[in-house]
Length: 119
Length: 115
Image 1 (cartoon, rainbow over the protein chains, first blue to last red):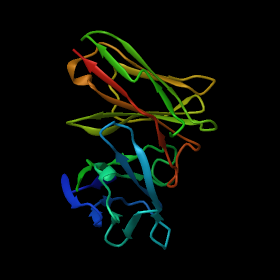
Image 2 (spheres, rainbow over the protein chains, first blue to last red):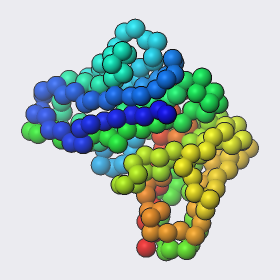
Image 3 (spheres, rainbow over the protein chains, first blue to last red):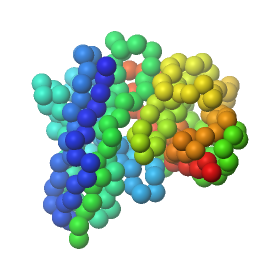
């Protein structure tokens, strides 16, 4: 069964420094997608970045990059130059590939990491 | 703004009652997903509809039901409510029914409190 593991319940980072949030996944699918979402205290889920299992290059979106290591089944999120507004919960999620069920697209989420940025 | 709308934003009700949560997907999206977020269970997938048809079921209780209408909006019905049903309920939408690159866009959520 697919599973996402986020081992850091909470993390602190100094403003303007970089931080890495860990995510490991378990799947037997050959094709899958990995996503990161941000959930601020207001509650909405904000899409940050996506990595496909066949993408050879790590995904980047502004200050966010995804450190994808397929052999280790890890998809860590790197936030560069942290800002106070980055304080939030961060969720790693996986979309199963077509060869899993073949017909459903629900995301499987980890339990999240609470990031606190210190001034 | 993801383009997915959910109403109401907050809902407070009593045990045993029934409520309906509403979701309008992004324009052009055919899939609608419902997720429940609670402190103890985390983010759990409940159910998916694609173009009006039920596509997949997750950890949805028998007291809960959903449907997707011809205009593609969806409603999640929660009945015989219990204290443990208090949670944040998200609706998400996507263009496709599934696939590994199936990006989902989340609505702002409905926070349900059962007293």
